[in-house]
Image (cartoon, rainbow, N blue to C red; front, side, top):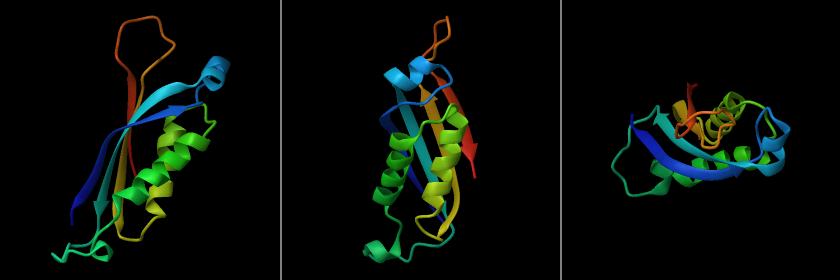
Length: 116
């Protein structure tokens, strides 16, 4: 068993509770951790591993098409979509950061972590 990680993917999304968030859009950062349920055999063949390209494309597809209010919904949908790419996945973990949060205060981002 091993993990594949995609770190700090950046996307522009039109999600959020406030109408302005959906109209103007905002920047998201996403970390994805995919834990496999098989042991790598040591062969140098793509068929003997998992393709992180498939995981990136699944994540991008969810983010670019989502009109969700909550980042939790986006994270949940990413987990479900990534799991559909292959049966050799044990768990998927998503760290999703919303960089421009409409809250009066000083901080870098709001982040959720979800595992499924």
